Length: 327
Image (cartoon, rainbow, N blue to C red; front, side, top):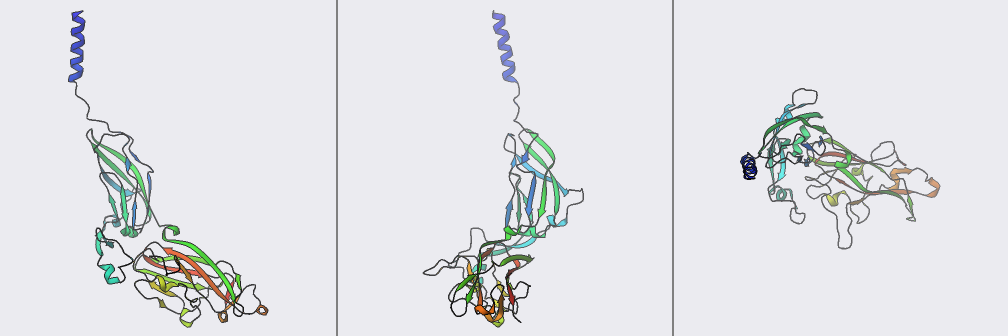
């Protein structure tokens, strides 16, 4: 019996003295979605963290061998620093006090940044405005993970898909109607809703070019009075905080400086107008489908609400599909 007890004691001692492993390192770390979509030019986009699959922390990741999916070299734009304008640390826009470009610029600074950064603690990828310079395409990369267990390589862990933002990422419409007003009686008759489109023509600047055109694409001339205000209701100018609206023969142009635009709602002592804008095209400039001359003359009265979400230069076109410009 004593020999049995002694044997068990020796075995227990041997087990107790055996070196304990330093932890666990999974073979199956991953992103939630190993296809990462980078919408170039957005203010900020972050991927998910790497899921360490139960690996023992702490761990450190390294991105290695970022390359074109076809095996070709990485475009130099990924490793080029570009100038972008940011708010200084701890500062943000205040609509009540930041009323001029000079006051706004006291809070902003121009810095040089790479389009993409890799967080070695979380494995997250972060893309900033400089990502507008990245070529469209698909790029794969390896990840090296180090934790108390050791270091392991994970080939082709994920694919970065550099894509252009969708229209909804840049521009949203929240209201859009048009009515015909009788010049004599003031009677209101609904028209077809206009077609509002937004086209980004440059990553540079912060400019909105607003055009109104008839069903044939012929523009109305705001400089010549073919587009006018409707009483005391808000128009483009009410949302132009930093620069006056410029009128041309074909468009109204606003350099809005900072996105989103409109930046804040238009509120009067009696009404919260949101982002609504109201205009009128007088009857002497239009023929409206389905409104024969025997009924009298009618003006075109659109109302809309939209918002640009990112700096750049855009053409916002409002097309009246049931209107023909006279002349």
